[in-house]
Image 1: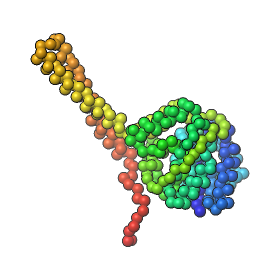
Image 2: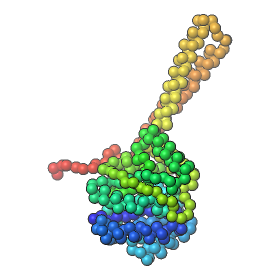
Image 3: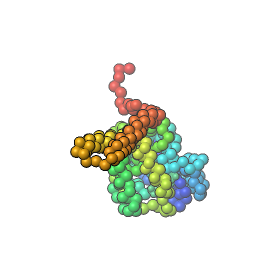
Image 4: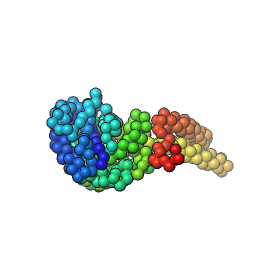
Length: 315
Ligand code: UDP
Ligand code: MG
């Protein structure tokens, strides 16, 4: 039996908290009664600098219900950082965490399956959205296109998985070794490794209120996803430079050819050649400098070189 912490970030969620707490308490006590988790498992609501009564409600819930705990952040730090704050706090208090949005759009049934899959030896269990009908058409298409782009850029992510996942204490301890600032948990967890599984996550509409993910927050997250895991955009500059150099060489032969055939306009040849050649040199130079910056970027991240999963030593 494990002690489970359900970490749930909340930003201006006063409309959903009571219902959310009720459902999560119900789930925790059922799982505890079925001997899957301990009776001191808990929900950890992380108040991400809300401007409404979110924290007051969490405090009231905590007074009345031993399953409910809270963490109050001093200001709004965003979804990813709020989840991280919750996970790093819970890691010293529980054996495993499940992160789930406070609006409970994700499938609560899946949490039991996550606990079962953990009992079978999985350290990470990803909730994978199988039904995005609760999301708008715009959100659905943009999300799917984005996952494809991320894959192309070389970031290892689980398709259609957001931040609904189960992590064991071992994974949380390994995650703590990643000191980076621009968090993109969907990319970091697969990077850590360990045995993992997925469960289906049937999405429902938000309990109440509106999406707290403004367009600018979404764009920032999307850009973090690419730039925190891939230096491919820089590599692409180098390829463009090489391509331009190739055109400059073709231009050179074309110009020589036209001079031989006496079929050219004065001034045109030298202009075209220098144009492509200078363009290629500048682009290549940016690409080369970029490659070094890419390396510096990877160095400053200070990610661990490896995470040990098991040891068989005669100590
Ligand atoms: N959230 C947060 N900080 C923010 C924005 C959102 O903690 O700055 C939380 C929010 O309360 C919710 C979760 O992140 O629990 C996901 O947000 P939301 O449901 O609004 O996003 P959507 O499901 O529309 O993508
Ligand atoms: Mg939501």
